[in-house]
Image (cartoon, chains in turn cyan, purple):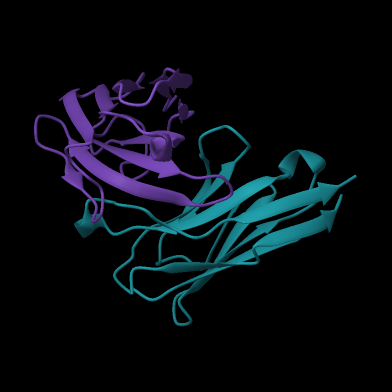
Length: 113
Length: 120
């Protein structure tokens, strides 16, 4: 019930295309859903986050879509660039659980020039 | 803003020695810090949660006597890997969270750059 399932494991997209990464959760008590980007040898960096009272959030080329009834959320990267090539992690947390993040398994994105 | 630093960035040590890793929040007060480890091509695994001035809470399966965590101030937490062995070689990452209104999101974890530990 604490798991966050992420797919696909890897993704190859042409430059300018749309990258889509999906996550699903079971615990309806989760109240915060961030996405992190990680480059090799570096710590994760927060990309964008959403709360369950909002169905979509957009920041630049990055959009989170949130479906509360389906317990799913996804990251869309518009106009994908080679510099977006990295590993992306979705996560979920609960305020009443010390804000501990439960991470998905990660998606390795490769954007080809 | 929201910068978290780690020191050292890379450490190589001999089996049986202890290694200390520092995690600092540079521009905000971290009410809670988290320590993760990450194996190659895997996700982050939470090791422990520490609140300033109190004992750390360890996740199931993490040896608290092996991974000593001290959260001495609102800007510094340390992880000491005691009697390190080759199987402790990993990428250790800390994160910091603030519950205090300081211009930063109050439930966002900000991550450090990580420390690569290699035990020979």
